[in-house]
Amino acid sequence: QVQLVESGGGLVQPGGSLRLSCEASGFNLDYYSIGWFRQAPGKEREGVSCIESRDRSTYYADSVKGRFTISRANDTNTVYLQMNTMRPEDTAVYYCVTPGFLLDCAVVRESRQESYIYWGQGTQVTVSS
Image 1 (cartoon, one colour):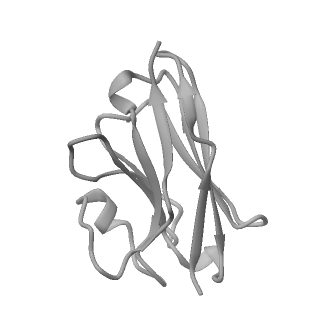
Image 2: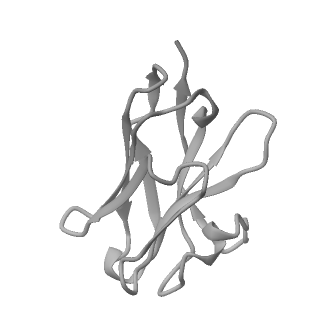
């Protein structure tokens, strides 16, 4: 049974940093691409970042490129999203996702909320002074 559990959200000042964690269970991370969506109040969910199972290549939305870094630790089945130089517009609920066995990051790159995607419960990130 695929399970994704996020942690690490909270309140941070503009310019600050947070690191989100996504602990995966029920599957071998080696064969799954893992990504992050976020949803700000009153807005649609958008794909933020993703790391491919195939070649560990990464994707970042233009809005976070150069500030966020995604990484994975296969020994602990955990994916991280390091968020630096944060802005008020980064305020959102962040969701860890996987499209499934051997599928790539297309759903994240294209912000598609397909029915087959596995979702975590989400973690709130608030950037405010």
